[in-house]
Image (cartoon, rainbow, N blue to C red):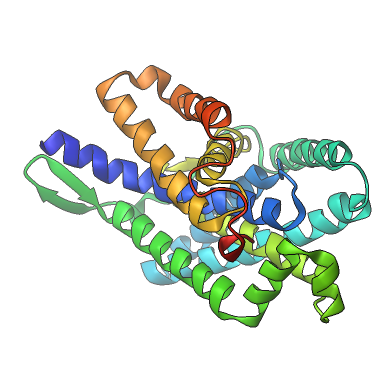
Length: 300
Protein backbone atom coordinates (compact mmCIF):
# COMPACT_ATOMS: atom_id res chain seq x y z
CA UNK A 1 0.00 0.00 0.00
CA UNK A 2 2.84 2.41 0.80
CA UNK A 3 4.35 1.70 -2.60
CA UNK A 4 1.02 2.49 -4.25
CA UNK A 5 0.73 5.79 -2.37
CA UNK A 6 4.30 6.72 -3.34
CA UNK A 7 3.54 6.02 -7.00
CA UNK A 8 0.34 8.06 -6.69
CA UNK A 9 2.31 11.06 -5.40
CA UNK A 10 4.87 10.67 -8.18
CA UNK A 11 2.09 10.35 -10.77
CA UNK A 12 0.33 13.51 -9.59
CA UNK A 13 3.65 15.37 -9.72
CA UNK A 14 4.43 14.24 -13.26
CA UNK A 15 0.83 14.74 -14.36
CA UNK A 16 1.00 18.34 -13.12
CA UNK A 17 3.85 19.04 -15.53
CA UNK A 18 2.10 17.36 -18.46
CA UNK A 19 -1.12 19.25 -17.72
CA UNK A 20 0.64 22.62 -17.87
CA UNK A 21 2.33 21.80 -21.18
CA UNK A 22 -0.83 20.25 -22.66
CA UNK A 23 -2.76 23.45 -22.01
CA UNK A 24 -0.54 25.31 -24.47
CA UNK A 25 -1.20 22.75 -27.20
CA UNK A 26 -4.93 22.73 -26.62
CA UNK A 27 -5.35 26.52 -26.33
CA UNK A 28 -3.51 27.19 -29.59
CA UNK A 29 -5.38 24.40 -31.38
CA UNK A 30 -8.66 25.67 -30.00
CA UNK A 31 -8.19 29.16 -31.37
CA UNK A 32 -6.47 28.60 -34.75
CA UNK A 33 -6.64 24.77 -35.20
CA UNK A 34 -2.85 24.49 -35.24
CA UNK A 35 -0.78 21.76 -33.60
CA UNK A 36 2.11 23.92 -32.45
CA UNK A 37 5.07 21.53 -32.54
CA UNK A 38 7.33 24.36 -31.35
CA UNK A 39 5.51 24.39 -28.01
CA UNK A 40 7.94 21.90 -26.45
CA UNK A 41 10.78 24.36 -27.12
CA UNK A 42 9.04 27.00 -24.97
CA UNK A 43 9.12 24.41 -22.19
CA UNK A 44 12.88 23.94 -22.70
CA UNK A 45 13.55 27.69 -23.01
CA UNK A 46 11.73 28.29 -19.73
CA UNK A 47 13.90 25.70 -18.03
CA UNK A 48 17.05 27.43 -19.29
CA UNK A 49 15.97 30.94 -18.31
CA UNK A 50 15.08 29.54 -14.90
CA UNK A 51 18.45 27.87 -14.31
CA UNK A 52 20.43 30.92 -15.46
CA UNK A 53 18.56 33.41 -13.32
CA UNK A 54 18.20 31.06 -10.33
CA UNK A 55 21.92 30.23 -10.29
CA UNK A 56 22.71 33.95 -10.26
CA UNK A 57 20.31 34.68 -7.38
CA UNK A 58 21.58 31.73 -5.34
CA UNK A 59 25.18 32.90 -5.83
CA UNK A 60 24.11 36.32 -4.49
CA UNK A 61 22.64 34.72 -1.37
CA UNK A 62 19.00 35.57 -2.18
CA UNK A 63 16.28 33.84 -0.12
CA UNK A 64 14.72 30.71 -1.60
CA UNK A 65 11.34 32.33 -2.22
CA UNK A 66 13.01 35.17 -4.14
CA UNK A 67 14.97 32.69 -6.26
CA UNK A 68 11.89 30.63 -7.09
CA UNK A 69 9.39 33.43 -7.67
CA UNK A 70 11.87 35.68 -9.51
CA UNK A 71 13.00 32.90 -11.84
CA UNK A 72 9.45 31.78 -12.45
CA UNK A 73 8.18 35.25 -13.36
CA UNK A 74 11.16 36.01 -15.60
CA UNK A 75 10.98 32.66 -17.43
CA UNK A 76 7.22 32.96 -17.97
CA UNK A 77 7.59 36.52 -19.27
CA UNK A 78 10.47 35.57 -21.59
CA UNK A 79 8.63 32.60 -23.07
CA UNK A 80 5.44 34.63 -23.48
CA UNK A 81 7.38 37.18 -25.58
CA UNK A 82 9.14 34.39 -27.47
CA UNK A 83 5.82 32.74 -28.30
CA UNK A 84 4.33 36.01 -29.55
CA UNK A 85 7.40 36.54 -31.76
CA UNK A 86 7.12 33.00 -33.12
CA UNK A 87 3.43 33.51 -33.84
CA UNK A 88 4.09 36.77 -35.68
CA UNK A 89 6.97 35.34 -37.75
CA UNK A 90 6.00 31.74 -38.44
CA UNK A 91 2.21 31.48 -38.19
CA UNK A 92 0.48 34.80 -38.81
CA UNK A 93 1.74 35.17 -42.42
CA UNK A 94 0.28 31.70 -43.11
CA UNK A 95 -3.10 32.38 -41.48
CA UNK A 96 -4.94 31.89 -44.80
CA UNK A 97 -2.70 29.13 -46.14
CA UNK A 98 -3.37 25.41 -46.01
CA UNK A 99 -3.08 23.64 -42.66
CA UNK A 100 -0.20 21.58 -44.04
CA UNK A 101 1.82 24.76 -44.67
CA UNK A 102 1.31 25.97 -41.12
CA UNK A 103 2.14 22.52 -39.76
CA UNK A 104 5.41 22.46 -41.68
CA UNK A 105 6.17 25.95 -40.40
CA UNK A 106 5.62 24.71 -36.84
CA UNK A 107 8.00 21.80 -37.39
CA UNK A 108 10.62 24.14 -38.84
CA UNK A 109 10.27 26.55 -35.93
CA UNK A 110 10.68 23.67 -33.48
CA UNK A 111 13.96 22.63 -35.13
CA UNK A 112 15.13 26.26 -35.30
CA UNK A 113 14.45 26.92 -31.60
CA UNK A 114 15.97 23.65 -30.46
CA UNK A 115 19.16 24.25 -32.42
CA UNK A 116 19.24 27.82 -31.16
CA UNK A 117 19.26 26.49 -27.59
CA UNK A 118 22.01 24.02 -28.47
CA UNK A 119 24.22 26.70 -30.03
CA UNK A 120 23.75 29.23 -27.25
CA UNK A 121 23.69 26.92 -24.21
CA UNK A 122 25.77 23.95 -25.34
CA UNK A 123 25.01 20.25 -25.66
CA UNK A 124 25.65 19.32 -22.05
CA UNK A 125 23.17 19.31 -19.17
CA UNK A 126 22.99 22.53 -17.18
CA UNK A 127 22.47 21.76 -13.46
CA UNK A 128 19.97 23.57 -11.23
CA UNK A 129 21.11 24.74 -7.79
CA UNK A 130 20.53 21.87 -5.35
CA UNK A 131 20.08 24.16 -2.33
CA UNK A 132 16.40 24.69 -3.19
CA UNK A 133 15.38 21.09 -3.81
CA UNK A 134 16.36 19.27 -0.64
CA UNK A 135 14.15 18.01 2.18
CA UNK A 136 10.63 16.71 2.54
CA UNK A 137 8.20 14.76 4.67
CA UNK A 138 8.44 11.05 5.46
CA UNK A 139 5.56 8.85 6.60
CA UNK A 140 6.76 5.27 6.86
CA UNK A 141 8.23 4.44 3.48
CA UNK A 142 6.28 7.19 1.73
CA UNK A 143 8.28 10.30 0.82
CA UNK A 144 6.79 13.65 -0.13
CA UNK A 145 9.55 16.08 -1.04
CA UNK A 146 9.24 19.83 -0.74
CA UNK A 147 9.78 20.03 -4.47
CA UNK A 148 6.82 17.72 -5.20
CA UNK A 149 4.70 19.84 -2.89
CA UNK A 150 5.88 22.99 -4.69
CA UNK A 151 5.12 21.53 -8.13
CA UNK A 152 1.60 20.36 -7.25
CA UNK A 153 0.75 23.57 -5.36
CA UNK A 154 2.03 25.84 -8.13
CA UNK A 155 0.22 23.80 -10.78
CA UNK A 156 -3.04 24.01 -8.85
CA UNK A 157 -2.62 27.78 -8.51
CA UNK A 158 -1.87 28.23 -12.22
CA UNK A 159 -4.80 26.02 -13.29
CA UNK A 160 -7.21 27.97 -11.09
CA UNK A 161 -5.79 31.27 -12.36
CA UNK A 162 -6.17 30.10 -15.97
CA UNK A 163 -9.78 29.06 -15.39
CA UNK A 164 -10.56 32.43 -13.83
CA UNK A 165 -8.88 34.19 -16.76
CA UNK A 166 -10.70 32.18 -19.41
CA UNK A 167 -14.17 32.03 -17.87
CA UNK A 168 -14.42 35.17 -15.73
CA UNK A 169 -12.64 37.93 -17.63
CA UNK A 170 -13.18 39.93 -20.82
CA UNK A 171 -10.00 38.62 -22.41
CA UNK A 172 -11.14 35.06 -21.68
CA UNK A 173 -14.48 35.80 -23.29
CA UNK A 174 -12.64 37.23 -26.31
CA UNK A 175 -10.51 34.07 -26.53
CA UNK A 176 -13.55 31.80 -26.46
CA UNK A 177 -15.42 33.95 -28.97
CA UNK A 178 -12.46 33.96 -31.37
CA UNK A 179 -12.13 30.20 -31.02
CA UNK A 180 -15.78 29.67 -31.91
CA UNK A 181 -16.10 32.15 -34.79
CA UNK A 182 -13.41 34.64 -35.81
CA UNK A 183 -15.61 36.51 -38.27
CA UNK A 184 -18.47 37.08 -35.85
CA UNK A 185 -16.13 37.99 -33.01
CA UNK A 186 -14.45 40.57 -35.30
CA UNK A 187 -17.88 42.04 -36.13
CA UNK A 188 -18.50 42.72 -32.44
CA UNK A 189 -15.16 44.49 -32.05
CA UNK A 190 -12.81 41.73 -30.89
CA UNK A 191 -9.27 42.03 -32.22
CA UNK A 192 -8.59 38.47 -33.38
CA UNK A 193 -4.86 38.96 -34.00
CA UNK A 194 -4.26 40.35 -30.52
CA UNK A 195 -6.38 37.60 -28.94
CA UNK A 196 -4.41 34.91 -30.78
CA UNK A 197 -1.10 36.45 -29.64
CA UNK A 198 -2.33 36.52 -26.03
CA UNK A 199 -3.33 32.86 -26.31
CA UNK A 200 0.17 31.95 -27.51
CA UNK A 201 1.71 33.99 -24.69
CA UNK A 202 -0.40 32.32 -21.99
CA UNK A 203 0.29 28.82 -23.29
CA UNK A 204 4.04 29.44 -23.51
CA UNK A 205 4.21 30.96 -20.04
CA UNK A 206 2.56 27.84 -18.60
CA UNK A 207 5.09 25.69 -20.47
CA UNK A 208 7.92 27.84 -19.05
CA UNK A 209 6.65 27.21 -15.52
CA UNK A 210 6.63 23.49 -16.28
CA UNK A 211 10.22 23.74 -17.60
CA UNK A 212 11.44 25.21 -14.32
CA UNK A 213 9.56 22.55 -12.34
CA UNK A 214 11.17 19.76 -14.35
CA UNK A 215 14.60 21.35 -14.02
CA UNK A 216 14.26 21.61 -10.26
CA UNK A 217 12.75 18.13 -9.90
CA UNK A 218 15.28 16.26 -12.04
CA UNK A 219 18.21 18.57 -11.27
CA UNK A 220 19.16 19.79 -14.74
CA UNK A 221 17.96 20.94 -18.15
CA UNK A 222 19.08 20.04 -21.65
CA UNK A 223 18.58 21.71 -25.03
CA UNK A 224 16.43 18.84 -26.39
CA UNK A 225 14.40 18.29 -23.21
CA UNK A 226 11.25 19.67 -24.84
CA UNK A 227 10.74 16.92 -27.40
CA UNK A 228 9.58 13.87 -25.41
CA UNK A 229 7.55 15.75 -22.74
CA UNK A 230 6.07 17.81 -25.56
CA UNK A 231 4.87 14.71 -27.40
CA UNK A 232 3.45 13.25 -24.18
CA UNK A 233 1.68 16.51 -23.42
CA UNK A 234 0.27 16.47 -26.95
CA UNK A 235 -1.00 12.94 -26.23
CA UNK A 236 -2.56 14.31 -23.05
CA UNK A 237 -4.29 17.10 -24.99
CA UNK A 238 -5.65 14.57 -27.51
CA UNK A 239 -6.76 12.26 -24.70
CA UNK A 240 -8.69 15.05 -22.99
CA UNK A 241 -10.09 16.39 -26.27
CA UNK A 242 -7.76 18.79 -28.04
CA UNK A 243 -9.10 22.32 -27.96
CA UNK A 244 -10.73 21.75 -24.59
CA UNK A 245 -8.81 23.20 -21.62
CA UNK A 246 -10.57 21.08 -19.00
CA UNK A 247 -9.81 18.00 -21.06
CA UNK A 248 -6.12 18.98 -21.32
CA UNK A 249 -5.85 19.17 -17.53
CA UNK A 250 -7.52 15.80 -17.09
CA UNK A 251 -5.47 14.24 -19.89
CA UNK A 252 -2.20 15.50 -18.38
CA UNK A 253 -2.90 13.93 -15.02
CA UNK A 254 -4.03 10.65 -16.62
CA UNK A 255 -0.88 10.41 -18.77
CA UNK A 256 1.32 11.16 -15.76
CA UNK A 257 -0.42 8.55 -13.63
CA UNK A 258 -0.33 5.89 -16.32
CA UNK A 259 3.37 6.47 -16.98
CA UNK A 260 4.35 6.29 -13.31
CA UNK A 261 2.20 3.29 -12.44
CA UNK A 262 3.25 1.43 -15.58
CA UNK A 263 6.90 2.12 -14.78
CA UNK A 264 6.40 1.03 -11.18
CA UNK A 265 4.34 -2.11 -11.74
CA UNK A 266 5.28 -3.25 -15.26
CA UNK A 267 8.62 -1.94 -16.53
CA UNK A 268 10.51 1.33 -16.28
CA UNK A 269 12.26 0.66 -19.58
CA UNK A 270 9.04 1.10 -21.52
CA UNK A 271 7.52 3.97 -19.54
CA UNK A 272 7.68 6.32 -22.54
CA UNK A 273 5.73 3.83 -24.65
CA UNK A 274 2.54 3.99 -22.62
CA UNK A 275 1.76 7.61 -23.49
CA UNK A 276 1.94 6.72 -27.19
CA UNK A 277 -0.17 3.59 -26.67
CA UNK A 278 -2.82 5.80 -25.09
CA UNK A 279 -2.54 8.27 -27.97
CA UNK A 280 -3.06 5.52 -30.55
CA UNK A 281 -5.95 4.02 -28.59
CA UNK A 282 -7.70 7.38 -28.25
CA UNK A 283 -7.27 8.19 -31.94
CA UNK A 284 -8.70 4.78 -32.84
CA UNK A 285 -11.59 4.42 -30.38
CA UNK A 286 -12.48 8.03 -29.41
CA UNK A 287 -10.82 10.61 -31.68
CA UNK A 288 -12.63 13.49 -29.98
CA UNK A 289 -11.10 12.60 -26.59
CA UNK A 290 -12.67 12.34 -23.14
CA UNK A 291 -14.28 15.78 -23.10
CA UNK A 292 -14.75 16.10 -26.86
CA UNK A 293 -13.40 18.80 -29.15
CA UNK A 294 -16.56 20.81 -29.60
CA UNK A 295 -17.64 21.68 -26.08
CA UNK A 296 -18.04 25.36 -26.83
CA UNK A 297 -18.18 26.61 -23.26
CA UNK A 298 -14.79 25.10 -22.42
CA UNK A 299 -13.07 25.58 -25.77
CA UNK A 300 -10.28 28.12 -26.20
